[in-house]
Image (cartoon, rainbow, N blue to C red; front, side, top):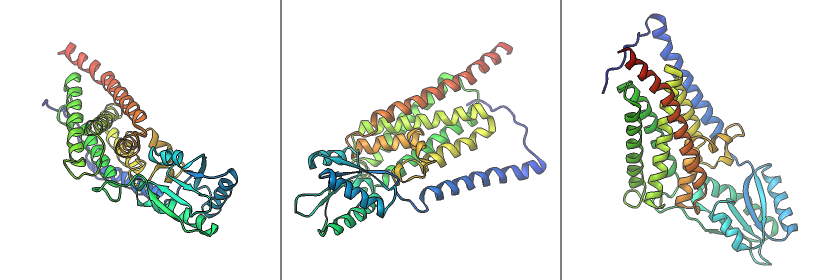
Length: 332
């Protein structure tokens, strides 16, 4: 550990007001974002399937639109097998099989969580009732025995993001002049060890909440930790003292609220939805869910985006740290 350079402390009125202002601004953003995302969640063009004729599909789509305007994006599938596979790899969130004279059947994935199940069950129950038949419901991707509400991925991701944020902050607080190569080695050690620990806790040796392969889960979680840790360090190096509150807003508040761990991105307001596809938490959560339940849905995209975050941020840290270290050596 090296000694941190002395910083001139803020005093007087600035020292009194600045902590209050910064913390209240961050808290207000947190409350505003989470209320905007979850105070009255409803789907926006949630993909669902219908197995039936073109006429039946059109009628069902019209019925869904009347009951929940803009809520569903209806796709027609040729047969039940294709629709079932679409639910299993999360191309769609539910499939309504009209049948031929028999009671219609709803295929859904309990692993998407009770909120999604309630949404599709309620909407399609109304469709079946209008046709005069009871609705048969079949869970084709049930939640894990240790994760009955499908919330474990959110808590695991939140913990990884918080740990990555704290690591990025502490590495510069405790060793601001650590050589770049050793800082990257520390980031790698933190990420790999964190991935292993969280995968053990959530897997069959722990709470049996995420049934995906151990090495796959550990790898994705390690990439999430590396992406968040390097992003926190990069923001601190680029923006100085302002980098820490900025990282908390981007990675903790916006990242976790748009992660898809509580509700799919289709339930988010339009201005928040794109963040779930670019921030480390959202792409990591989707990859973990894909590994655990949905035939690797989002896995390749998640690995690519998390790796890109890590490489880009490591490059920015190199750009800021290495020339400064060389200048200090030259003047020593």
